[in-house]
Image (tube, rainbow, N blue to C red; front, side, top):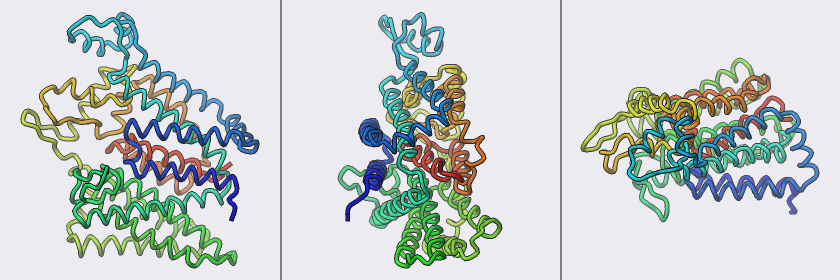
Length: 442
């Protein structure tokens, strides 16, 4: 069976997403470089096709202002890493100037960013996100293409869940390059952080439910997909178990929100009365109660939702005790100090170590609040530019499908209470869902 060009390129896109999922969501400088190259090559292959070119031109014509503002944002990030004469740096970043003055030796030039090399790789990541948007508009322009993506992500979530659950049941041993020392009592799979793993699986769960909805519609049109329907239900079971056994309070809270949204939609808004989605969602709830209630203990059913209280656990060293909320407060204070031009993306760890010199081996490489960290990294000017480039998504009424309302609710909660939106894979899935789940794809 010969694959069409469109399928070949879509499968290449899926392959790159799989690489992200295998290597900790692409959350490392080397992964960012590799994925930038892979997506860049895929974009160059696509741009040669006349039809894809027309799709891209149409998208560019409809979104010129947003693309232009986003490019300004990229150049703004480049400005943050350019070495500036100390006299000029004092104007743009007085706080960085103070830090430099405390160092020994004469420094003639320095960048606004506290960690220019990390900021450079983050710029590559932000360019990659724009490339991904272009690829999506070229390759995924019908409902059939969107359903193909949903089937892929459902399968990927299933495979990742099986591996994570297997690791978990065997005490999360370190296997080759995959280190599981951080969460021995939770499912994380290929991901270092359990919340990032849970958020990834939530995207997979939504894709699974939407793939199942599509199959129900095809059945009503006399198309037989009996075995595929069984497979997806099996995927949903394992994805659900993966989310539950991550024991991420934020992940499980978002899981509950997802279930509520789907049940509310199925009972009050769905037009397809033959849909079995509501029964699948109820079955998911039963799995939840059975697994947590009988295997892990009834208290787990409620305890895992107390993320506002328990997620802010303390980190310890011999010299200082900091809770996660203290780190969030610290990041907000630093935002005020670097108010206008920020301290550069990927620089929070350097900022933390500069201010807490006595922590020895204990340090924070993220602020535990994406919102406060993004504010600090970009500064007020960078944040305004970024918001301006993405504003069209939120003012367009076609953006507010059921799926995108769920995704936006994820984004709001994660911005305030977690750092998952700093993970490249989560960023890519976020924009992919927002684009593919508009009420009208084109």
